[in-house]
Image (cartoon, rainbow, N blue to C red):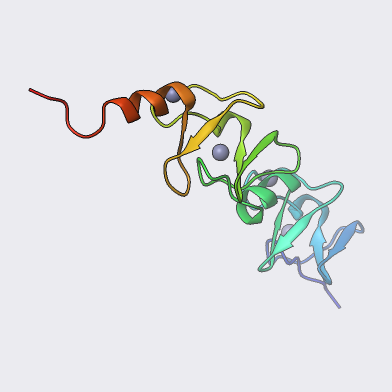
Length: 131
Ligand SMILES: [Zn+2]
Ligand SMILES: [Zn+2]
Ligand SMILES: [Zn+2]
Ligand SMILES: [Zn+2]
């Protein structure tokens, strides 16, 4: 009986095959569906597709409140209220400055926030600029 590879649907004729998700694969077909790297160690799966750790968490992990990409366990993150952000996405919505740890920030809406200076500036000059 000839096994077929779950990755490429071709027969597996080599002696070396892998069993992943209860299916058989060519060793070189066990690749991340996103970055195409061979998954030599740990692999993650969803909907019959295989992913490396990075891509799996980018797709299915907690999403960053700034850029909407998934957060990988190796990413440095900041939390604000119930949202989590990449460190690089933790920026003031106006001046785009990255806010540092412990710095005061002011929520604009669900996902955006301002640094203290911009918040104070916005408060002192609300609405439209005078002509
Ligand atoms: Zn294959
Ligand atoms: Zn990958
Ligand atoms: Zn982000
Ligand atoms: Zn700012």
